[in-house]
Amino acid sequence: MGNRGVLHDDEKRIVAQWRGKRWITCLLNFRGRKREVFTPGRYSELFFLDEATAYAAGHRPCAECRREDFNRFRAAWVEHEERAWLVLAGKVLPWTFEGYGAAVPVTESRRVRVLTPPSIVRLFASGLVPQVHASAHN
Image (cartoon, rainbow, N blue to C red):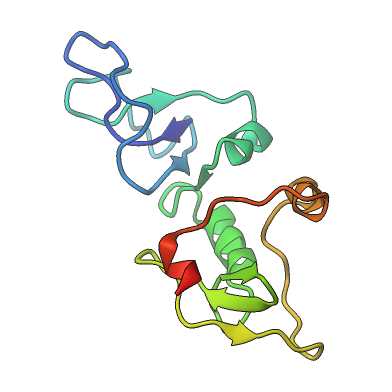
């Protein structure tokens, strides 16, 4: 089950695609908790076919009900100097929620693990240029 915040109104109609930055996936059963789907003022339940579908939709494991999965996810996400980085025009830029930090030149000795799925990396290699935050161009 996924969560992107309160996406519905009091009549249980979807009125938004997301609210907030935390898109998470939770267990359907956890500590006997029961919820009414689309309770007014509470997060909107999203149901996925499987975890692969939830990841493809941009969700990560919940830190409460899926702690072990969350810890594995977090360990895989922190890749170099415990930060995520953008590779752009021969430089790497540290990623933050506020924007990118100062560029650091790429050297052959710098090794990082790529966070982007291989299929998306192949698109970039074939010429697709993604839009990036203005701070990446400073």
